[in-house]
Length: 233
Image (tube, rainbow, N blue to C red; front, side):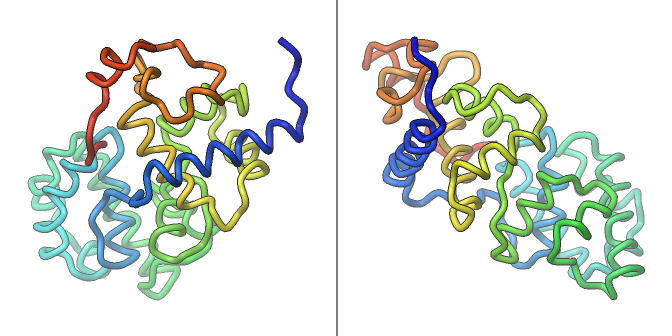
């Protein structure tokens, strides 16, 4: 099979993005939030946990701690009790309280709107920062979670395994203004059709453009049984 040229890769990637846009016109962040602080907290909670579970916990959490000062002064045991069902609750409590204290100390109680500042906060890496920037501040960012990593490698866009390197590679293929919504489209596709173990290849709208076609069942009836409607983790 001939090596794909750079121009051909860019064209294929952007065509796949257009197909995903048509397939998932309602793609969006599946974490419930009302402001940057709530999204930051919800994203910290979403580590190793489904968005659905996080959304069950956050109404109580957000009501208990409406401001960053409330999180900073929170009783650790009380917070752990509220978020326990999200898993790793002690570490997440440490991250949330530490994040809030840092925001109070360094940023006058306002969640910063720049990547370089967000990633200095406890419990906040590039993925979390890009979620907050893209969805709460309108700053384009690529959310390189496990679904995103798996899919862009399956698409044949990169062989990189490091999230930061993947972010840079994909950032050169997709227009910057679409980075945030593109991330949602890919994540939705990974949750609904392009599963890790057995993708629903036979009903995938990207099949003709995907070098991994055939990884899962290609017969339509069998593939359709694998499709999962949202919302998901």
